Length: 361
Image 1 (spheres, rainbow, N blue to C red):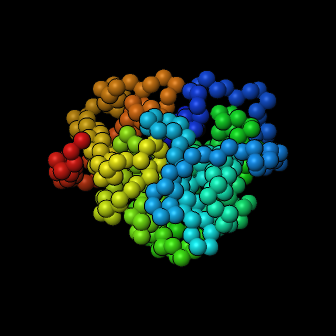
Image 2: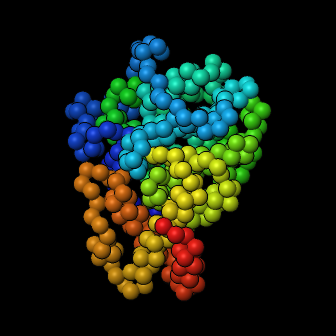
Image 3: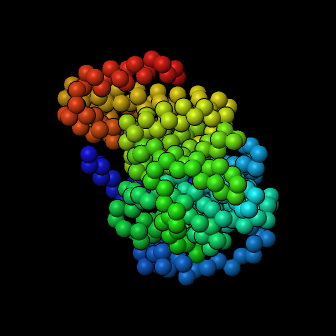
């Protein structure tokens, strides 16, 4: 199935809203920010000069023995800075996600240094969206081996890497992006379920297939029962599938729930007191929207009319809850058109309805 085309600026504004404090529409790139001046090559030449001791560390939260979370903004769904984490092993540090810019990556590195002097040996990326990967260059320069899915495709990059970086820089600002270079191409590519022993610590990397994006990875630490979900899970239960697949997300959620994690770090927002409840809430929200879009498609209702029945998107907030639901609806409507065209609508609908009964909100 072909992915729905979304204009590059809209996609990037939505992603950038995950990290920018102000509403994206209020942060207009200055005239001096041209594509040439904000290309990856130009930003790489702009090396910031701040001293390491002037970089402010983020707060940390201990999730298990030698396992830590660095929480971004909470109470805002996907809006605000994303989450990251790290594991201190016997021989070095495993970092999980790198935040949205070199400046944020440096702050994350500074945070790790408040707890250990051990070398940064590995960086695992849960997916390839900029708000989780644009700080990766900091860790690569620190000597980390990059572990990621080899599929880097995202809608935000469809007009080319330089266009994506330029638009991202226009929202976050040159100061945040100085020294940037792409660093999400894996040195260790993981395209199938893999167990790694990193510094004596067992790290299970689950590859759920296309869910939030084509390149999703779930990081599972069986010894502490801590799971890093990336953006398969968001604190408010509305995971985005614009770059992925709602059916794939449902399958991924089943895999995550089967692990019975004691603690989950979602891609954005607070750590759930009950991990299984967040998984089930996310499943319910996805199933509910699938059922509605399937019903609309079956009744030959147009996409515009189907969207008109949903709450309006929030102006200047492309990843607010309502905005995410509407953007997911566009994707899922197209999925349901294909599903009803190529398979039995009755059997598919029965599957979703049964799942909804077992998944209380």
